[in-house]
Length: 301
Image (cartoon, rainbow, N blue to C red; front, side, top):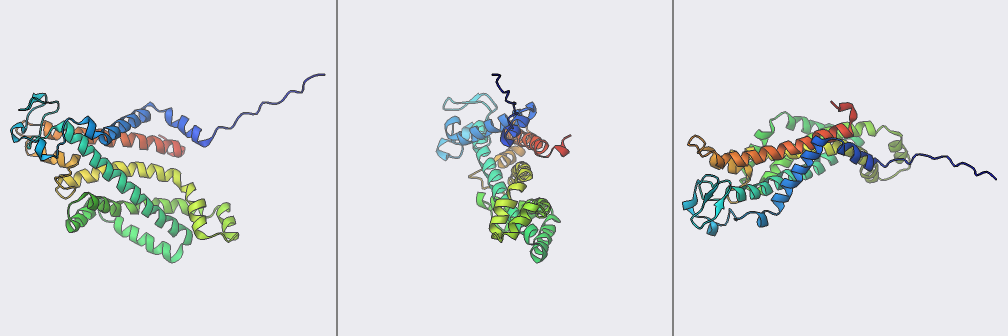
């Protein structure tokens, strides 16, 4: 008796595995991701990696101020990247500064995404008066430069990490709301949303369980790009003296501390924090650009 041949059906690949495979196909994106993970690990473990706590006054010596890279301190320590005007080890200062910059950038992007996504979804789902109010507020805010709005908020609230995060959330939420609203307006007319409405499901369930998941792919791309933008904005605010306080300096404040010494040849005080800021932003943008190409192939260059 002959055996019946069983046809071999190809196993359908899961969307997540397909996404990982497409993302891993780009060496540039993998390089950017590896660099960002390395930077994040350096910032997280700054207490153990850095040879000095640069913000502990008991560990600072004014006699070690503005030492060039590779110099030794009075106590015999070697400063690989030199010191600033207060005798801080630049390598340790960069690690602690990265921690503040990443915390502000990632934290503000998350909170802004929550606020903007919620308002954008509600505007698209309910329409009419809610849509009009939300979009007019968005148009009003986007008509002003982001840096100007953030400067005005911090001039009123004062310098602190919390206030910088709050200012960046107020600046960034409108971009999320506009983009999510545009995506949700298309999804709102799909059959599955109309079927859920016909079943009289609660609007919260329709919005956050059915509408939101289909808006996540572009939202991930926007959030990635906003993290880099928030880090750059925070550095600009700190450089101008309205960002984080001097007791918790970020990369922007470290750059500002060495700006006045650039013409005297003491480049390392601003150069190394500026290089760390540049590498961080570029690595995030490399990941964000490839995420955009993977999640929306029509935009692929």
